Length: 191
Image (tube, rainbow, N blue to C red):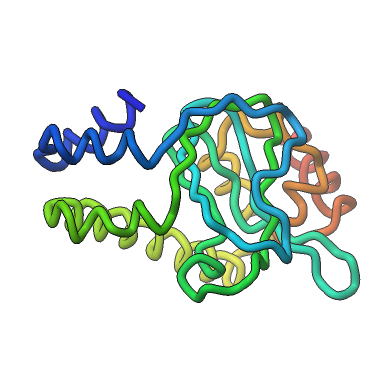
């Protein structure tokens, strides 16, 4: 938690009361590989900040196919924000791909931080803007780039992730088949 607060303090002044509030609504946890933090179809009350390890969020469509939406590594947030903000059941599953350390927050209580400590609004707005930009880039990349180009960008964004993930996780994130991913890797190794 100290790491997260230190990161926040680089952007805004944090009152002692705000720091105490963050501690009161959070819990640092060690989670195991394969542990499910959110399951598709359940009520979502938590959001998670990753301090070590690798998690992913994904959904399973009506045909049983997995679609990876996000990988979360050190200093990234992960949850099912659609479920939280629309008060719906989870459309995503959040799974630990490695033994990880996370800070678990009560999402509703975290949302109140803006009311109690208005200085957090600019911090959260900045995080939200970065997240929206990232999503827009991902959508545009899916529409405009070839699979090999998307794979290259993926490796730039997540340089060490292949050691933690399975091929089908990466393929589903890129929107391609495992066979296509294998072909791309073979072509890259020839260069």
